[in-house]
Length: 149
Ligand SMILES: [Zn+2]
Ligand SMILES: [Zn+2]
Image 1 (cartoon, rainbow, N blue to C red):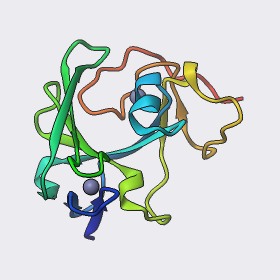
Image 2 (image 1 turned 45 degrees about the vertical axis):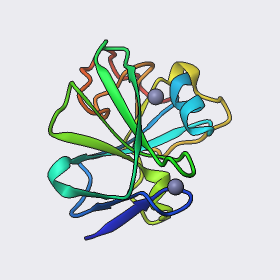
Image 3 (image 1 turned 30 degrees about the vertical axis):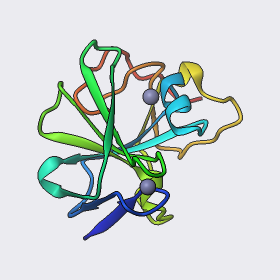
Image 4 (image 1 turned 90 degrees about the vertical axis):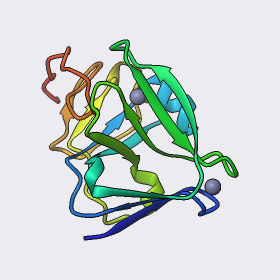
C-alpha cells in the first residue's frame, strides 16, 4: 500500500510502498529535542520502498555508535521527515507522525527508556530497551530487553 509522509507545510514528502520493516519509539533526549515531542515514533524502510519529493536540508550528527546519522528536514517549515545513516546504507527512517495516520502500525520496540517520561503508556507487546534497540536502522543491539512488569 502507498502511504505519504509530509512535513508541516506539505512541500517535502516521502512516499512509501509496501510495509515498514519495523516501527519503534525512542525516548532518548536527542529525539525529544529534535522532534519537540516527549517521544519519537520512527518507521524503518528499505530505500527502494521510498520516493522523496520536495526540497530538504540536512542536519547531521553522530549517533551513540559513532557513525553519522543525517536528518532531512524541510527548509521552509523545519519538520524532520526522514533520516538515513552510514551504518545502514540500504534503509532509511521516516517519522511516523509525518504520516498523520492513526491506522499506522503500532510500535513493537521501545528504546532509551532510561529517559522515558514515566506517565507514558505503550502497547502491551512492546519490547523494552533501556538504551539502544534493534529497531533503529543500522545500530547494533547493546542492551538486553527487560521484561515489562
Ligand atoms: Zn515544510
Ligand atoms: Zn532517539
